[in-house]
Amino acid sequence: MYLSKDAKQELFAKHGKGKNDTGSAEGQIALFTERINHLTEHLKNNRKDYNTERSLVKLVGKRRSLLDYLTKKDILRYRAIVKELGLRK
Image (cartoon, rainbow, N blue to C red; front, side):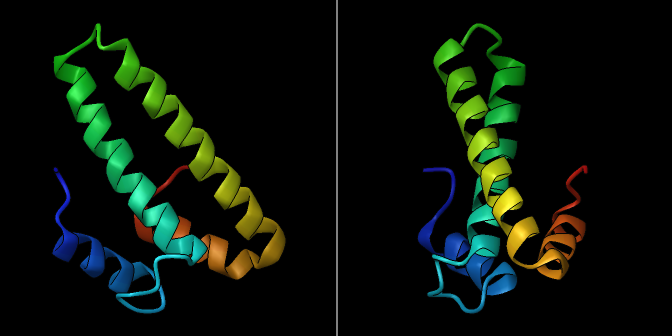
């Protein structure tokens, strides 16, 4: 797999509340962003891989819904995660 267990723990430690906190919205958004970036690179080389394209669209939708949830719940956390990850909007 492209993302090892240690890399995921480091990602959750950096963006979540701790390395074992996989349920926080920030941690999930960071993980989705990593997966989206990985799939985007894959699609640059494999343009006709429509299954991966569909997976990418679904991931973007999941990330968008989590970002919308954070907007309603706590706008400061939303602004912080968008700035950290360099997301648009």
